[in-house]
Image (cartoon, rainbow, N blue to C red):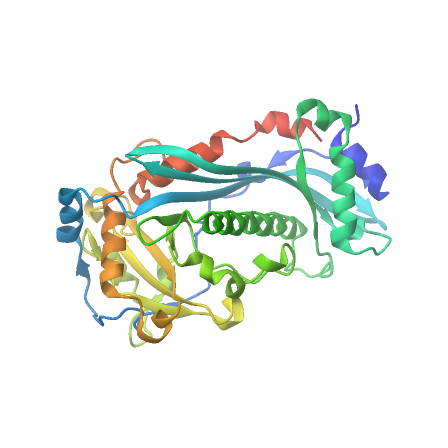
Length: 389
């Protein structure tokens, strides 16, 4: 039976080189990957909450009170998206050689009911990123690559294994020749964008099914700062179109760039976060980036979950929290009492820990760790996946 690259080679009239296959996660030098945009800056110059303060806010009394009265936790749904990407071949079109990148995408949402975690919904998406040069006849890219995906899914090998590719995604080759452009990165970025669209789709489904509300927030692992998309579903491309879906959604980032924080005067202020007392939060900063995010504004703040003397770095044990500002919040800021309740609930999710299981244990919230573990458990093994090609 024909392998995937044999089918792609024939369908797109390219030349496959049958090159060495590997996971991008298994190569390269160690580096720090931030959940947020490492190039942005957060300023506390303009407050994003109703009570203006320059000092950390102690949340331990409220967190303890919420535990004593036994109220249901505010956070009921937990969403995590992840991907694994692989170099599976090189293919030539018009005497130029391009990388072929495949990805496994997992998007999972777990819910908690009476202290039990269960699967709410899950997507597993298999995708393939090809250069746009594969569309040699100049068809509409969306129609052309959708047709190639359908032909691929009709192959005997995929039917035998009961596997299905969600999409063949084109990546742009218009900047070939630039020293700053690496084609592998363009292909990986196309798969990343597809994963983000799947996250947006899941949130939209939860809202449509009336799962979310003031007593049942969704906590998304990672940033909510979605840039505008040039492709994908029209109704999900911009935050402006979907911001109403995020009324009861907060984003929590386990890692962030501390150098991006500036004080009221515009000077670097990362030590403010490093010295944040345990179980305290910072004031809420108002953040916007019209070039990157349009006219959407965010409330951004930081919470220390663990004592820094028990962690490896000053920023271990600190999470960054984001909430999209809606309606009156844009004019007056997010209600500080709401910020405190959300923050106290986040603090109460810090135990039990996943110490020894994940090196990011100090920044993990346990329901998020369980959701992330569930998503990763649904991946096809690397050996089986690469064998498809």
